[in-house]
Length: 465
Image 1 (cartoon, one colour):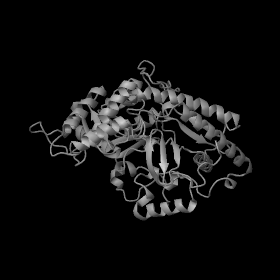
Image 2 (cartoon, rainbow, N blue to C red):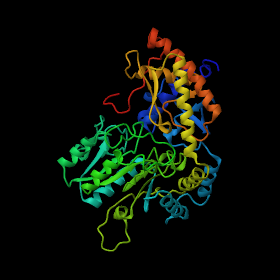
Image 3 (cartoon, rainbow, N blue to C red):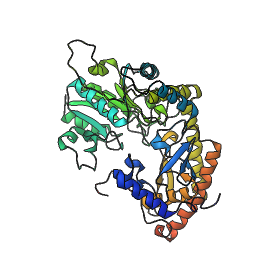
């Protein structure tokens, strides 16, 4: 593969002009901060025109193999013909009607059938609304104030109860953030301390079932690595089960945020793999293969706080949005779920991840970079880490690696995969990585600044630009 297949037509001045236009009309230059310029090297295309399968195209019609997968919202592939056709049918049926639609009922019954503990559902258009709704349900049901979340989990909501607990506090209300208590994932004592300090005051514990960090074992030992098949016995008593026991012991609800893991790790969510059932869960991203859809689901006992068919019950104003029942996304969800079930898409993602991890390890070792480029986490949700000569995580080196991968036609801001990633894409990735790591190895010896553009990727959650 040529060393720089995307340098000729990707004129720096053109990309600079596009970035300027974006920032002129959109705060942050994109509608998700993770899509912003500060998350990518300067040779990354600031605007993408289309996507198909595992690939995206820029404004010069250059094609890139993509591992961003629309912030992991794509699990089958961009512009899947079957999913698109299902959405188009619902466009032709009216998009959004005056009463609940037929596809709205079908989708609601489907998710309650697929997810074992889901007896009711409220749909939304983004994950932040779904997670905030889950917190509201817990507060309404328990009559309590506090919610506990792990500080290691990167994002739950754009609302003040979460954002106010991060480094970016400007514009948030301190009393909202004060209701959020942070604990450490895999440190059960840090959670127990909150329940000891606030007995009878905590409404819920909300957490992702796993990220690149997996739940530790019953005694704090490294937990059993998950795979594509459920293993309730192997995960019995692990950190997730301990969290649920502490929450229920004090009358709080146990909420799992499956926004990333749901419909990707397993059709029934990562909870199924770990042999645990939450009281409430939130889903989104891959559930409709990129269409704007999220959901909060749970047991009827908790979800019915938002019901209107129980005479005399005090009302809770839950999710109530004009586009919550928008039909094309619900049609896409129904079809994507059929594909996921019939073709076992999650199992294929696990298999590709195993090959990718093995290939990364081999290529890194061949370039003497095994200490400077590593992966962590389950094969289904790997994170890659770049380390400098002192063994410390290095954003400059990550920027250089991403820059060099893009020059070889691979956009790899993180490692999101889809069903359309196959053997051809695997080999293309490993060839690009081999070339990129050769540059990174030279840069470690001669100085990264000699090879990298002047821009360095930055964390999303920082106090200043």
